Every structure is written in C-alpha cells, then in structure tokens.
Image (cartoon, rainbow, N blue to C red):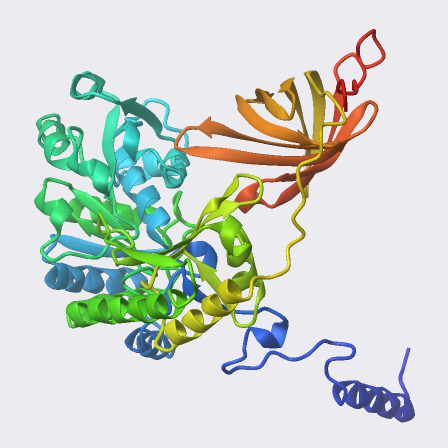
Length: 529
C-alpha cells in the first residue's frame, strides 16, 4: 500500500505536535543534572545510615567518575586490561595480585569457582555441577551470612564448625576452601590467625569476605594468613557501585578472572566493564592518597553538630559509639529519649524523616508503640554523609523531636477472638503462591506458637488486639534468615491480611482453621471479651 505525500505530511505534523507536548503522552523526559532522579519521580536520600547496597552504596569520588568517563571513550582487550590492572593493584596494595569483579559477591563466587575447578576448562564448564570435584567449604558458624549464597551458587557445600576440633576434623579430600567473614568474630578462638595455618597444612586456600571494610595496607587479612580477600568497590573505597576488589595469591586470582566475564564460564553473567575496571583502579589510587585522619575528624564534627541540635530538646541525650571492626568503620551517634514522655517513638521519628522533605535515612531506630516506647532512640552513621548533610539532618531531627507528628495513640483492645489451634495458610506473592501452617497458643492477648513453611519452620510470637492478629517469625536457612511479619483481621473462620517480607516486599495471606466445620473448628470469642 503506497502513501501519498499528504499522508506523510499529516503523519509528520502529528508527530511534531506530539513531541511538542512532552510529559502528556510519553512522560516527562529524563533530565541530566542535579534533579536526575526527581525527573523520573524518584526522591533521593540523605544517607545517615552507612554503606548499604539497597541505598546505592556510596557516592563515587570525582577521580572515579573521571576515570570511568575517560575509559568509555576507547576499546581495549579485557584480558590485557585486567593483567595490567592486576599488576598495578599489587603495587598499590602490596598484595601478590589483584582483580576487579562485578561487586564483592561476584568476587566470592569467582574465588569459590577457582578453588573448585581451578583453570581447567572442562571443570569450569561443568559448574555448578560439582560431582567428583572438591566442593566443600569449611566455615566457622559465625561467618555464615546472607552473602555466602554467592559461594553456594557455584555448587559448593558449606561445612559449619563451632570448635577447633570440629575444624580440624572437617578437612578431607573434598575440601576446596575455607571462608571467613571479616569482623569481630575473626579475632576469636576460630579467628583467621588460628584457622589459616591449619588450612595451609592441608593445602586449602582461605578466603576472607571483607566487603564493607576499610582497606588496610599492608593487608591485615593476607598478613594473617589468608590467600584471598574480597572487598566491595562501591562502599568505603567509593569506587563504582557495581565493582568489587579481589586481592591475594596470583595463581588463584588469575584463575578467578578466567571464571569471570568476558570468559564463558559460570561467572559470565557477572560482567565488570572497562569503565568499572578503570574506575575501581582509580578508587584504589585515590585511597592511598586520601587523608583518612581528616575524614574521621569531619565525621566527628558532623555528629557533634547533630548532637548539639537535638539535645536542646528537653529529655533528649546522646552518646558516641566507636566501631569495633573495620566494617562501616566510623563513630556513630545514638540519640535517646523516653518515647512516652516525649510523645513520639524512635520508629515514628525514623518514618517521619524518611517520608519528609528532604528524605533522611538513619542507621536504625529503637522504640515503637507495639514493642514499647520508653527506650526510644535513633542512630546516626556519618560514614557516607556528604558536606552539608549534617546541618540538614540536625535541623530536621530537631524539628520532629520538638514538634512530634500527631500519632493516634490507642490502648490495645481486649481480644475479641481466640485463634488457638492449627491454621492452614496460603501466601500470595507478587508472583506465585505457597502453603504454610500456623499453630497458635493464645493466652489472653499474647500469642506463641509455630510457623512452618514449605521447607522451613520456626517459632512465632505475637499478639491479638480486638480482632487484629499480629505475629512474627524468622526462618533460618544456610547463612541467612527469612523474616515474616503477619498482620491480619480474624473473622468467623479465617484470618486475612498482609505479610511483610522485608527486602522481598509484601504478600497477601489467607489463613483458615484446620478442619474448619468440625466441632470446635471456629474462631471462638474470648471469655469476658
């Protein structure tokens, strides 16, 4: 079908007209500037919490931004690039070799892959199928954490140990690696200095996960006997948020690089581009030049400014807490008050600051209407605050504490239902459903019992307020926990409501009494309700 000239003209005129009214049909255009996030409807945060991936880690240094922009303007062979970067990282950090990964979790995965399959292409292609390979990772129980999923994903099986005798017995011909989480625990009886020599006797490499730590030169973990140590590039180093740093034994890191993109192995999805690689190198170059004492004094001045402001509110006190490890290594300010006397809890102040303008996210809050308001508190972590943030935070926290938001305080209602017994539950997620079982023991308003999922289970604890039912449970799996917080309304034969899953969002749930319809299978009114 042919188009006549008039049709083309008409179409062009319509397109021009549409383009002349941005925001109506296509939405407002992205603005590249200080309001880049607001231009798409996202409100940025003032970070008084610290370096956490969920709130985008840190702000990259000017040197890092410049290096990434410059790197983007050329083509380069990535094997040649990483070889040169590895050598330069070794010079800067006094480690034997270095590598840039796609975040610290990727560095953990590449390390495990290298320890399991080495640089053997046949073994590399089989991962995460580790049948017939060394695939056991020994770890003290205190080191197990949510991030070791990156190691399990390669096909590794963790062997938890709690005593030095357990640790010695755990080594066998399937042992591929020892993993230790850096922190206060690694200085104890199962600390790195104790475990590393024993691992060396067995010829087993030791990996330290030091994601949020400050980089010490010479490296404290390698000096204590570790073979590999992994850092986040986008935390205290203030490099690219999607970069990580792996330092240590040259042969292991060379093998880890082969497991990483651009090579076709397990780590192929974990790509660090030339921009991240050079940005990470620039961050390490800057790290060795930064005035860390000056930065510490600046953090202290910021929390002092906030402290002076908030303590002008009657009943508010503060205390400075010093760090006990190299992770999120900065002084913190704790702000304390009696929530009942002041009329506002820590949780309510935290929410008001997060919902306000500008938005401020804190390092934690204590005290709530449900759990008790007297010991209310806020924690300020200056680690990732920017110049000028302290003044804004001081003003806003003072405003909220001196003029608390109106919160309807109500006394807990007498329980109107008794939910004791077994309940069959369906949880509906954003995608998919699952069936769980609840068993309640109700004594007046208090709930105790158990929550069993499709694979996991734990105790639960909660309360009944009128016909409102609230309870929590926490299910352990490998190195992490899955938390559930249920809030629902109990009717004649069911409880319906929502489940807060923390970082996994919210779900809906419906619970029905087991064998409903049988004698006694109803929601029973509480006596004297």
